[in-house]
Each structure stands twice: as C-alpha cells, then as structure tokens.
Image 1: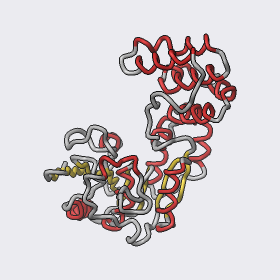
Image 2: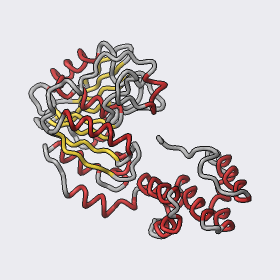
Image 3: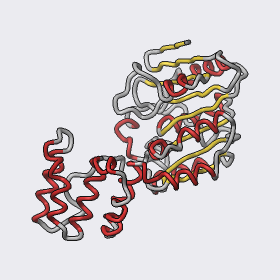
Image 4: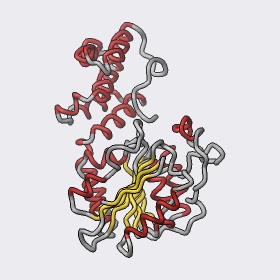
Length: 319
C-alpha cells in the first residue's frame, strides 16, 4: 500500500495485483470528517482484489485545497497506463466529474453530484451552506473541462438533484444519465439496498454502461430499499394519498416496518385517514427509543389536534 498525507488530505493506493483497471474513489460528504478511517470504496475494492486509489479530505471542502491537483497527478502516476475508473457519491461525485480530465479518466461513475456549491454561482445549492461558506473555491472545472468520454451519472428525480445533473450533462453529454426515483440525495443507498449498486460498479470496471438491465433490476427490487420506500411514503402522504401509502406498506417486509422514517410515514397515513388509535399504536413502541423517542412523543401529542403538515419538527433527511 502507498499512502501520501498532507495536513488536509490522505491519498492511499493498492496497485499491482494484476493489470486490470484502477478504481479511483473520492470520499463522500462525511458528517464526521477526518483523515482517519477507511476511504469510500476502499474495503469494497480490496475485498474484490481490485487495483484501487482513494482520496479523502480532512474537512468537507469539495476537494478545493491548493494541493489537490498535485495529489491527483501523483495518483495518475501511481496508476500508470492502467485504465482509470473514477467513482464517488455526492461531494465525491462532484470531484469525480470535476477532476476527470486532470486524472485522464477512462470512465466516470458519479452518484448525486453537484455542479457547484459555490455561493457565487447561479446554480448554488444552500443545503451545504455552512461548509461552502468556509471554502476557497480554486478548482471548479466542470463547465470548462473537456467533455468526459464515457460514464454513468446517477441522480434522483428530486428537483434540485435533477438541476445539478442536467447542467453537468449539458457540458458532458458523453455521460449516460440514470434517474433513480424517490432517492432524495441518496441514489447510491437505494441501489445498494436494492442489490443493484454492485452490478453498476462491476460494469464500470468492465467499461460497460449497464442499462437497461440495471433499470429492470431496480424496478424489481425497489421495495427492498428503505430509502426508496420512505421517500415514496412521505411523497404519497404529503399529497393526500394516505390510502395508497397504506397499500404500499402492506407489500413491505416486516424488517422495513422497524425503520423509523417508515414507521413515522405509516403513523401519518393512519392519522390522515382518521384511524387515530392505530396511528398511536405505531409510534408507542418508539417512545423508549433514545434517538427518536422525543419525536415520537411530539407526534403522539398532535393526535388530539387538527393535523397540520407545515408545523413541528422536520423529519431527518437531506430535504
């Protein structure tokens, strides 16, 4: 293993097991950032015996540090002439697209990328306002770099996610789009939970675009994904389709019903249909939960009041 450290980044590489391609992974937006611990896809690649390089920042800086181009040049030198597949989610997906030309990437696999988080840009997205306020933007190349030759851009149908993706595709039409419905900012989680992500990454390592097979498998397996199910349930409930939400719940495995956002959506659907006793029964077991007990208590207290979708604690999630 090769490791290169600076004050703000760590680059690790495992090369030479065979003459196959190299998976280069950019670490994701991390709620607990730091240089220690594994880099995104590090364990996954090593378990499969793949050549692998990864880059991780000390803070969520969208890889804007002054030393990043030099680190990427060193990574390309380590990879030599082997094909390079560049991979990342969210902040890492931004980097995968942004630095594809610098790395001379053969294939880009980007999950939920941003075209920018720069407040000075027209497509600024304030979901990461606290971080972007601290960043000196030095390397924003998506709109200026040569078109990416080949790859897959995976994003959800959410309006803000689609806006970023469409702008990237306008500059890089060589990327093949794949929309994952009801994924929020987590299409990678939906694909993983539906047993599809592994197929997507394996196809990238073989320089293949795995459509339409991937879309068909996702459609078949989507109700295995708690991320997909919770987003769809809240969408139905907010649009007054509580009955449809309850019909969906009947199709779920028992394990998914133990997931807090799905339990909350079930409670809200029952409440909206006037089935208050059943709604209370869904949340009462959560009152003792360390993480969600207070929120469960708040929702139970609202059962004696007229329902109002606009007030009260927001559910956990990126939107």
